[in-house]
Image 1: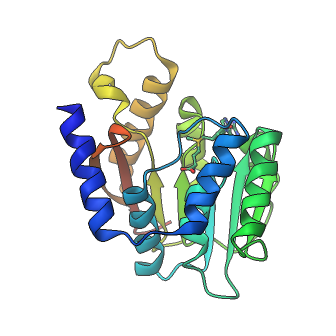
Image 2: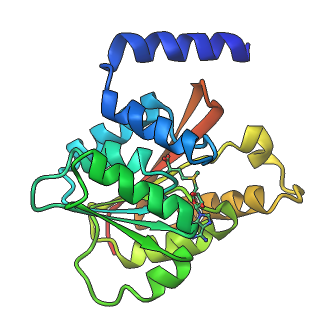
Length: 220
Ligand SMILES: C[S@@+](CC[C@H](N)C(=O)[O-])C[C@H]1O[C@@H](n2cnc3c(N)ncnc32)[C@H](O)[C@@H]1O
């Protein structure tokens, strides 16, 4: 079945998503630098781009940069006075992401903040709220990332969480995997917060079985 999903995902991506040399170059640069191939898929990247477009985001926060593949999908949708702050703990990942943003011509819109995301978030201080927040770093910290995401949100902010399926283990309350437990707590927090309207979108494809949560902030 996995093979069929991948085949369908590739077929749809080929039919629906134009070839893009810059995005492909970013993936090639990441591979050459030895970064893990755990970026979003092209179909997920296009979904992020559409969401940025639909909410007319001007200010974006991304937690978990890797080489900046998802960053680029989103940054290209920003207006010229937009900003995307992306948080990355690994110096090599941050350096490659910066190079990729230069290559793609969006370096003026994107700031790659290097260091543990929680530390960066604690030190952001007073600033205008973000319009869209993409959480895609270490899953055990997802509950804390959600708290900070809400801190930097306004009514109308869209908060997206990646990798919420965990190969189906997300339904296992006794899992000893810290990522599963982090995602389970994250989902509980999303579901129990009356300020949020939330859904989840599962995806099957070249990256396996996975899913996003999409949370709309109704009130703060
Ligand atoms: C799944 S990858 C991000 C993929 C990227 N969003 C994309 O789709 O192209 C997760 C990234 O989060 C980073 N990361 C892990 N723990 C972190 C932390 N505590 N603070 C900041 N970044 C972290 C990892 O180094 C890795 O580059």
